Length: 453
Image (cartoon, rainbow, N blue to C red; front, top):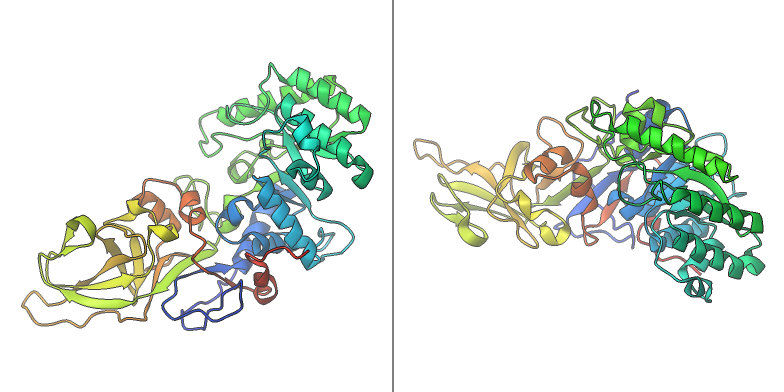
């Protein structure tokens, strides 16, 4: 499955998605291609072959919570997943205010009869009394119809107390997903604790306080194809399923696989897959298969116009600490992006940048608000002057859908000794998101919008 990438030359007048006002010519921006996200969703859903959840936590991995969520719903997602309750409540309010409901049979169909299903998996530490108190975040989550993850008896007791307090208003039980630890050693009930938790959940279900709708877990090494780890995870998950059944519970959904699991471990797809990093056009592990090999299109392009081009003499030090010196007379460009925007300081002396049709790189240390890039020699070996290959106002691209010049987020991850997830997700709030795609004008106005009462 292939698609034509949306063109972006840097010459259109970008608009702030939050305010609708034009951005200054010197403003950095992250251009988000919503059509690329829809394309990636269709590719991965076809591989998975089962219903799928769009994971939009952390502001949709830095791409914009509401625009990405709506794009995924239109692409066929039957669930949305976030980590934190504040983000879940914010997203629910945005979707309700926009009149967005759960998609039905056709990817473009958005009926108004049912809210999208939304799962949140990090629970606050609350006593039952705190959870039941008026205005508690758990009561707000239940009133908003948000599914909640349960790993411990304390979490179950708090949710059940909130559900009892909400019962007069909501009249429906709290929907919970029991999470088991299958080898991540992070969240989830340990095997020794699961029987008691399942029995308590069954008692709460019989009371009408909760409905156990799913059993789930996380894979820890799904990108390591020869490790045998995923097979062990799956075996432990199936054992947990038997334990839950022995307690009298019959959750209708089982979900274990995220992007790496759905791509490379068919047995782990179960009833639902959670698509995260792949939605954004990035591979869970480029060493196994990169974006192009998976037919995924990176959706974020980080760019900023050069604010200055200058010549420096051979031997001149650049940026704080003088960690780079010009080997010859050089042309330098100044890019108004820095670690205050989420550009990793680890990209000092190496972060790749494309500008003026050439590949450049950051020289010197990454500063809070800007970086310096090397545009090449200012003279020939014989000493004749050379014109700079770029000028102030030319657009510098730090990462995007890669080609012969434009770097990929994967390259940035390699330079910074990290993963592509971190490169895009850490992008700061002061970098405006600008949206491209068929529905961009209609959808992008929701980005960073406060929920209406």
